[in-house]
Image (cartoon, rainbow, N blue to C red; front, top):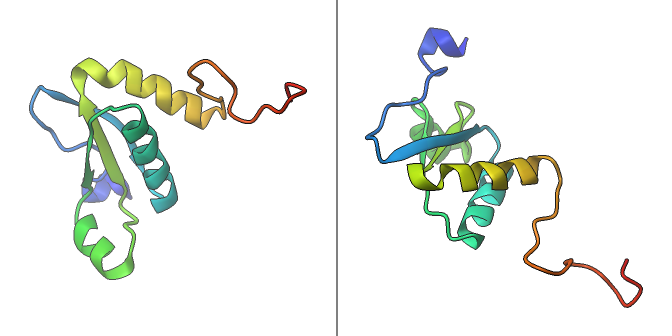
Length: 103
């Protein structure tokens, strides 16, 4: 059905940005934005098709939201995305919820 409406392809952009992923869930979009913000990875989002209008009316878009990052940061962003989707803890030295026993 997406192919029928032309929603199966990412909108083309200039050579400075690369498509990271497409999400169809506002909660996942919010999480990914938070992860990218936390790692200082600039990004922009674009609603697919008439998604912006649908989102304004319904609060979400069933067409999906594309996330783009600068090409030079695509690999880093993909690693962050994979870590999130695999449930891995991304740390910067120490575990986030260890108590005195290391648990």
